[in-house]
Length: 333
Image (spheres, rainbow, N blue to C red):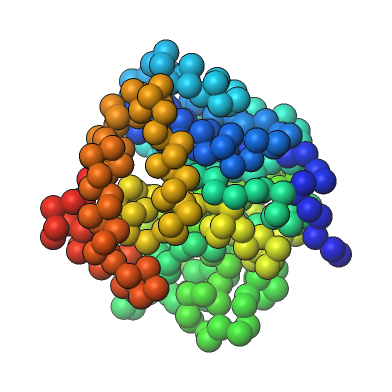
């Protein structure tokens, strides 16, 4: 089936925002979307968890200046209740927020994402969900005498009545992590937020509360969302992203993670977009309150970090990049 073009179909974008770091990241995300996709026809939702029994303190965005900036960039604040996760697992916000989205095709992105090119160039097929491959082999953690990758992943597919063999990338060797369906949850999409969200919620809750015995020694914090996500995508008929989606984590979106890492390894165009949309005084007045933006962008430390690395020959492991920045005294998060 031919991939549909994003420019010929309407879809919404959702990211999670809340008090603290995420509210500032949400402003940058919204500003970059408006700058690079002025003709985007969908809605941008900043989903915000509300105070309740599962939260220590109030996670809602209360700063008027932040809310006004979000509105000026066309973002809509969308409140939702945390019924399963909350403070004990804030990554669960990306699961629970889907329940309040309009029943229209959606693209979820982590808040530490900037848009750097036209979404109309991305070939979405919202009937076949997929997610980010910008990941390392972080889960499962291999135990010396514990079950291997195949046993762990197969136990999960079996638990939910899914076909394990059809999820495998047979071009990769047995017991190598890339053989198994595994995503970064930094972006994912589907035609139905209700169907996707319900399955994501149910799978994550079962894995958290009643995991197969093969997972008894496996850490699930912070990996729970990334353990459940491939099962959800496989169950809904999706899989690894096709070439038509290469603009995501490419020249259309950038999942920057932390400002030091962003300046160390991302493209010149991504840096240009970030610095351009953060420059206007109304934006600067708000975003300089967040220390990483203040130090790395506004005080110019990002340029020092950028000069330390050759982006054509970066260290193989992210931790090596982090360590080099820390040794230079330029790490901030």
